[in-house]
Image (tube, rainbow, N blue to C red):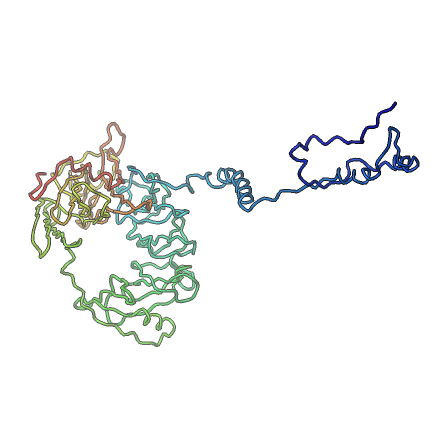
Length: 544
């Protein structure tokens, strides 16, 4: 006897007992067995194993149906997923394009440095200009070659890297440079201002990144170079080429308009009111100059008048007399303080006088230096919280040259000075000089005088055929030898200064004297506190 058992299908393992109460919907797990259904209908409700309920067969597919519900991401999960993908690629981007850099593109920090250059005497002011990527400043300084040297290209301009003092480029020429300014004009429109260099051969523009000549002032026909020029002033663009123009004094009689882009002389404007024209400078919308006749007067003219004359040669210029005060040329002001400097005599028979005054011209410090010349000071001023030691956050830096005694230098038979010595009856000599760097720091209540450094200088002198004494190094070349600036643009200030001297070399065939210039950079705000541990003076004469 056969037993009748119900037909069943096993549940998938992915469906648990707790899932049986859920509603599922899916296609039948098994295809319908048509042969089985035919047998059932033929046997009138009986299966092979016993009676079969047709209704249960109709319900079987419904039992095997299942519904799959696909879960959807929430907005938060989507954002998190996207951010995870971005974070996967971010390190790759950083290491490939952000972190890699070289010496030209990486941010730099300026540290203390010192460098020496042989056979040059640095002169004039220290010029600053942007390096290629404008991350820090580089330096450019004029120099005069060694008077003993027979080289032709021994004068020119040297550029140093501001971050470490290494040589950036040399611009060599046979003539001694007279003036250099790298802050006036961008002649090639590359976004970096270029240097204007003046010498007895004329005016030229030097590109600051490469140290190459861009142009030399030349005639309109481009046939000859223009000489007998004075250092120019900058005028707004006249010919609409995108670069400002320059105006210089030509042959002490004319205003010459020069194209800033090409260096071509555009026009000459004669100044009939003066026998000579000197010291051109711009002040706001005016151009001023010294007019030399029987007396010297200071005249001004509007730049718009110059422009009108440029486009209309028949236009008459209208000069205005201006009273130029010269009473304060030796007084340097810093907030409520004044520093008065006076130099007397011809060195080494000279002396100098330094006087510090506070409010209402009250004298608070004086010092007389015998056989000395004081060079024009530089001013500095720190932020309120930049320098806390004694709260001296402003002041002056002064350079003093003090002569000691003469000596007779030794020369070999083929030295240039020796030939002069033979002809001029032993008139060559040397001077021993001490160069002092004096810091005068101030606040609202007191002052401090510190001798920051001393340097021994050997100066060699000779008489020319016109009985003019020429000495090297010359204190006149030191007038702008101190600069205070922020080279790396980090908010702190650096002190840059240079000096030159001859040094005696032992066991050298030929000229034993070598001219060396030294230029130094100090982080002023970090180095200044150290100076307070050295010799200093409060409210009394310093004992130098």
